Image (cartoon, rainbow, N blue to C red; front, side):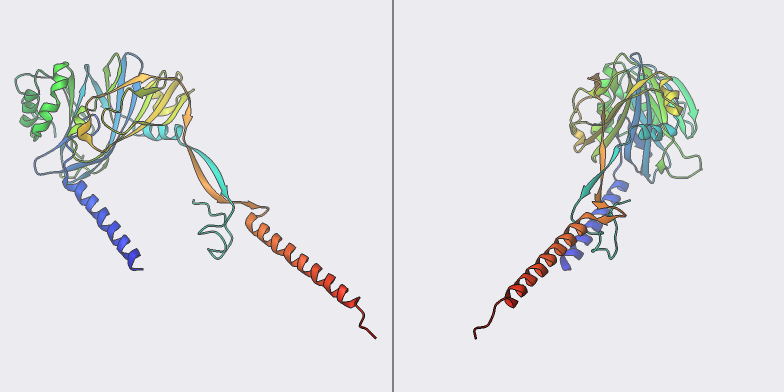
Length: 366
């Protein structure tokens, strides 16, 4: 009992430490962008998910974040290889893609009863579990567009050096981590552009919390690339979920410093509908779902460059363990054991009768 209490206490302390750590650790970088809160405020991103559409010429990234912390405002920056078009995304998109890629459900039966099955639960059962940005800009930064989209103030920028981009952000009321300036240098050298977003709740003074409205960013790109370099600045392990919609199955060329990307679904969507059709049109398309963990984000050394692979379909299988039964739910083990006991009793009775008949047929000497 003492060992059980000790394990429970250890688990509770660990969970509390995790929660407190997520509130005080700034999430300067997550996924393909960098989250930058105002000074003295903190924001954390539990998970970043993106749906990526690529038709060979144009790449469209729809992103959603689930955030926590005490920030009332924050900036989000994403490097892109070409001039970006930014608009709000459809929140229904991710739910529709999840339904298309949901695992196949199968039953897996077991013979002997487990915890929760009769006689361990007292009855029969099968055991199944059921504010707009400021106008200031630094030398070397060009503001090519600015829009207000729901809770987002979006600025599309060009920059000739990362320091100038940092100056622009600071001039618009944000603190820029010094490490981020250096991380932006590879994009500046390749003459990429940037989408800078100010996130602010609709309610005055409210904190950024929960699931934010998706943001849809489209830009020209001759290859399917998902920017990831800024994520190397994260101080905590990162997870990435990618849903890729293209003509063929697509997978990263390398893990870029994280665990090996895991394909959880690959298949063809014959007739796109709803929010999926709004993104890809009504022609058939292939969906590839990838999951990847980055236990040590500082090891990220490149962006994700994705390539075409064989169009082999794949769907995960989730098993539900069920007690093997027959008829009206009678456990097979009970019939087997009961039948065995009944046979044993019958053989015992039969043997006893034989012995009785033999004993009765023996005569006593005169």
